[in-house]
Amino acid sequence: MRIIPVPVREDNYAYIVMSTPKGARPQGAFVDPYDVPTVRRAAHTLGLQDTDIVGSITTHGHYDHAGGNDAFAKTFPGRPIWGGAASIASVTHVVRDGDTFELFSDGAKVLVKAYATPCHTRDSICFFVEDERSEDTLAQLPHGLKEGADGEKKRGVFTGDTLFISGCGRFFEGQAEDMHRALNVVLRQLPLDTLVYCGHEYTASNVAFSAAVLPHAPGIRRLVSDVRAGRNGGVTTGLYTLSDELQHNPFMMVEDADTQKAIGGTDAITTMHALREAKNQGTLRIRL
Image 1 (cartoon, rainbow, N blue to C red):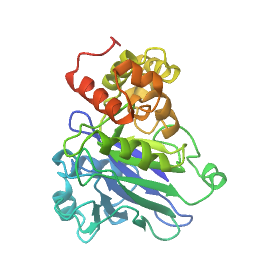
Image 2 (tube, one colour; image 1 turned 90 degrees about the vertical axis):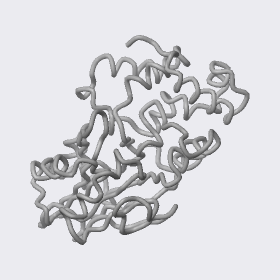
Image 3 (tube, rainbow, N blue to C red; image 1 turned 90 degrees about the horizontal axis):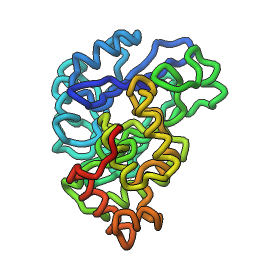
Image 4 (cartoon, helix red, strand yellow; image 1 turned 180 degrees about the vertical axis):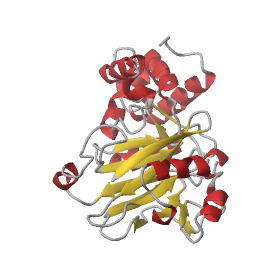
């Protein structure tokens, strides 16, 4: 399984998930294709034809993520569009927490599992994807197991605007306890080597805040170095795992005494609330 980020709008990411079964044509699916023509051109560049596109996944109903659904339905008629609510534009398959489905056919072996993470929106779903082939098999494929969009991936999670690299989404339709559950209960169920594919490139802004809150945290200092060095050309989505987030994301460190002390929280929930309020104000940050 390959996962290719496609930048759209100013800072959004759409994605192409693709897999090539032995002896068969490649198959692809889109994630949050706000700009369908751009994502479609990227798919063609990867060798995917329109007939190879099997469907689209929507992480939540905000327009910058679901705004391409109508165009997808017209461009790729009859293909499923998965999402967390029937109210999301053109969704044909409403998924609930714990639902699973096979993304591809003909032996491509990519399993998807939906995790409900309401807070940013009530319909937010994080989609965990896993190539069911062994890592040894993936390593022997032409692209091999390696960092970046060119490499095969064993597992990843599309987090929309719930989890960002070193950050999280605003609590538009939820409270601090909802985001705490989403990040530190629901997503903590996933394997720690799961790669994070988020909805926006916010990492520089996020880590500037994180480093101001926890300046001595080794994981945050490493991420600051990566951002300053322009690792992977500044495209940070898909480079970091959930294990990394536990070391450089204060919103996933709210049970740590150091985080609570730094932001003035007394427990995980008050710390989550205080972190989000401080990030919203935009004044607590280091210079990168």
